[in-house]
Image (cartoon, rainbow, N blue to C red; front, side):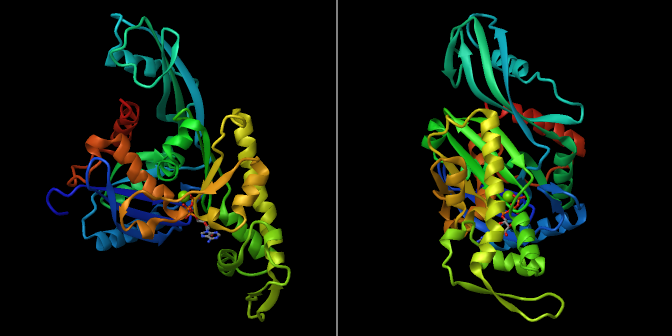
Length: 412
Ligand SMILES: Nc1ncnc2c1ncn2[C@@H]1O[C@H](COP(=O)(O)OP(=O)(O)OP(=O)(O)O)[C@@H](O)[C@H]1O
Ligand SMILES: [Mg+2]
């Protein structure tokens, strides 16, 4: 890395691909994308690491490629976490203010009070994100520091997950001789890359439909109100196509990407596709509508589950900005329409924008999480969001503990 050059690396460890993106900090407001490396991921199931060795191999390849393209050496990364084990809930804490003026320690105390919720012993608090503070009954306060008051309340969004999942991610990263600077919830990262501030203020739902998971985040009044990770994604569509069209998963994936459509009525009636046979059988010509008829029910199921999650959380009437869909599976024609039908909300496709450098290469919904990790780190970790020289390795558990403390501190 050239002297004085500051970089942030986002490492998205997804179910279908591992992707490293290098962002160079130009000034306080601008980041240029200078490199990207992607490699197929084979060691994950439904968003979680299930094979350390093959995940390590893919991370190494993605990092090497990103280093080559950007011309910098990568020593540390920000990564994301997802999986069905993630749960989000809202918490509330109240304290009496000591000297009539709110100090940093009062804010820390009220955050501690808010995070005290009953959590099963196999789970840990991953993020505690303030939504708003209330001072002597006055709500909607974003930063209460130095305000006068007697009673301070905090409303927070608490994200919990299985600690072993985070440990496995960090372990893979360390085995590549890299340092994990933070582990960020994937839907929060994607939101950074695809949502506007206006949408977050008004109320919006972001749905990142990847290969193994569908990640959800709801923002209202500028803050996260609900998060969830559903264990369903594009891989299910591929399996359905393989079974429905009697072809191999590899061919099914190609056919899905080239000809797939989530809404049958959008496909011309006499459109045909060629389906390679399995086990030496000859290729067959098939109606493209038939392919769509296989995909449509699963696409509907994904959005039905998303709708049920939004309804359960009580946000159906609170997201006038509608839905932003992103992630690889959102690219499929017809997904916007099926989402609009199932959720009865205006829907748009979201992809990274508003960055410099090689933005044209990363302007795809596939890269929302990796770019979002860079933007999240830039926004919330200003003081340490830069590439550091490799440090002495701390024991794994010690690192995770420090990071969890950082997650609480990062917003102040
Ligand atoms: N043009 C396309 N049309 C349809 N599906 C697509 C297209 N491009 C990619 N996909 C699908 O998107 C999925 C991969 O998306 P993405 O890269 O966002 O997932 P991931 O981050 O690896 O997985 P996850 O986030 O679930 O862990 C695959 O199932 C792939 O088939
Ligand atoms: Mg993903």
